Each structure stands twice: as C-alpha cells, then as structure tokens.
Amino acid sequence: MPLTPRPQSQSLTQMTEYVLPQHANALGGVFGGQIMAWIDLCAAISAQRHCGNMAVTAFVDDLRFEQPVRIGQVVRLEAKVTAAFHTSMEIEVIVEGEDATTGRRWPCVDARVTFVAIDANRKPTAVPPLVLDTDEVRASQAAGEARRGARLLQKRGNPGGPQQPGKTS
Image 1 (tube, rainbow, N blue to C red):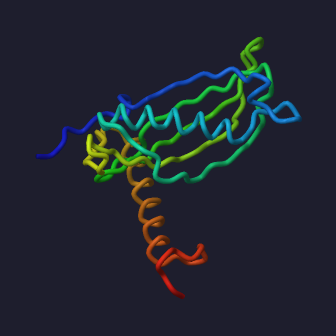
Image 2: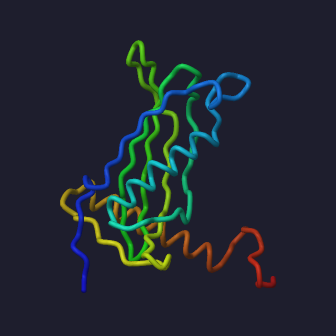
C-alpha cells in the first residue's frame, strides 16, 4: 500500500546550542566534530519526523565549514527533508553562528545527510514521498535524485575511491 506523501514543513527541525569551553578547541572555536554531532542529531530528528520511524545515518555529503563559532556564541541549526526515496531521505542542515548579544548571524556550515528509515526489526522500511507542492520542493527533490544517482554510480564503479572489501582490481 502506498504511503501518504508528507509536506517538507513536517520535517522542519530547529536547534540552538550554546558554545561552551568543552565544545571548543585551543583557539576558542567550536570543534568541527561537535558541529558534525549536532548536525547528525538535528538531521535525525528531521528524518524521523518525516518517516514516522527510527532513522539511521547512511551518508554525509557536501559538508563545508565556512566561518567559526566561538565560545560564548550560539550555534543555530535548521534541518529539513529535501528529497525522499524508497527507504532513504536526504536532509539539508543549515548551520549559522549567532552573537547572542547583538543578534548578528553568519553562515557556519551547510550539510546534506542521507538517512535510512528502519522498522522495529532494524530493517530498512519505506518512507513517505515528499508533497511536491512548490517549485522549490520539486527542485530540491530533483536535485536530491541527481545527487543520489551520482552517489550510486560512484559506489558501483568506485572511481578513485578506496578498495571495497571483497573486490579486486
């Protein structure tokens, strides 16, 4: 039975984190790994809101650090499902830094993360399609399909990638 499509707005997830000394490196900037952990958490909530099941990280794509966030500043994260496939979803996470005293914001990281929905037996399960109700959502689904196609092609052909277990050159 086909699943009922869900709007992108249903997956919208926003998080705010305060950068404390334990989150920062010796230069006072938040660790990249800490930002990545917050991205994974925000994306997981977004994926689970969309699919109505648990979801696990399958792939991280297009992670670009732009500007640092320092101790005493705020990290703002916003995630939404940008494309839905059979058992997986692509989630875009936008991360900004914020000076809490002035309200000034700046770009920190943009990321795309792929999650796979899993059932109670920890097996992949179908996810609802996105409601393609705006040009923006239609474009995000099409772009996500193109990125997914490129990833699958690279996985099959493995051009320039590390040797996969059980494969010989």
